Image (tube, rainbow, N blue to C red; front, side, top):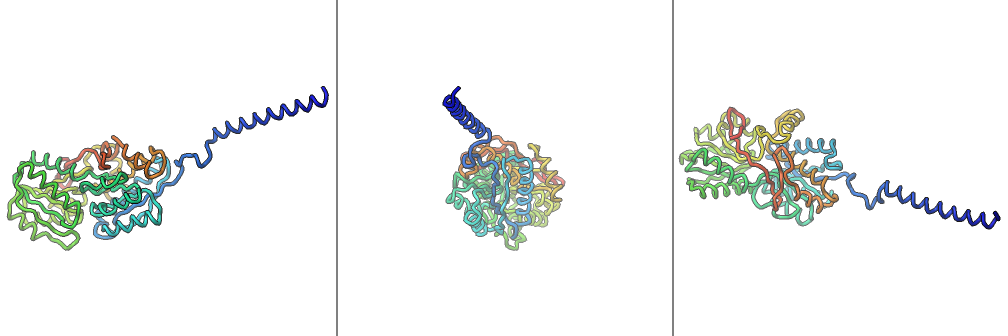
Length: 388
């Protein structure tokens, strides 16, 4: 073989080797995955803003339970990688006021660049902050606010508490059938949107059933109230039942004062918690509440949640804790199912949550972003909240 033929063969083998090498590189590239810019973002850490009352009148009865429940859920979700990524919190104290919640939302969005915010706690604050979420197109979920119409503010806003238009009609239907009350009085906090909406809904349902409303009496939450004047007036009316719409701080005192005045008509109070019952003592006996959760409820993982929460924090969870715990698990499920970590994709995944097992029961969102699961009615018997 001459030198020319050898050179020709050498060049041919070299060309073949180059093609084989390039082909191998391409296969290796496919095995390793696409370039970083094309990879999914499942490994990213996701920062979530928390807005809740760490100080102020709602801190001990509301904010403490909410924050502990979020922390418990966060540890579970990260340990088991349920969201596909680690979650972390930036928490801001809104002091239990709408003004504080507005400031917290703006800081989280403008300074911390979060695309998901959990909170605020109250309907009054939620009414002011959900429009901010709409403006900035970020996902906002309140685990505890329940006044009607707030989730409909934006496609990006959701709530996990059962709203007034779900709890009140069901509660009135069941209690009226069993107690057969024909005359009632109502008492509510005129400074709070949840309480205002609740009283309005109660009266709508009572009127529809032909129940006579003897009078409606108001108070202002956060002030020094002993409720003597309001409840003395109501007692003189001799109603068959008394409906109360209030935030946590006043419920126990209303029950104590009613007991002191010798009121025998049952108190029917939205979202009465174990802590309220303990604070009211024997005065809580026979009180009835419309809620979405209770320690007596046999829902998926509920007893395990109660045991873990109690072991971790030395106190039992309340309704606000249960809803907040469920909220983070619902969000983690949506993040795991979302096409990306963009707010719009997480929003879409949240909207598609359906019959998801939670401590609240089978959970879904309706077309407005409000919660759908089974409402419960509880009554205080021997100092414990039991199924009515």
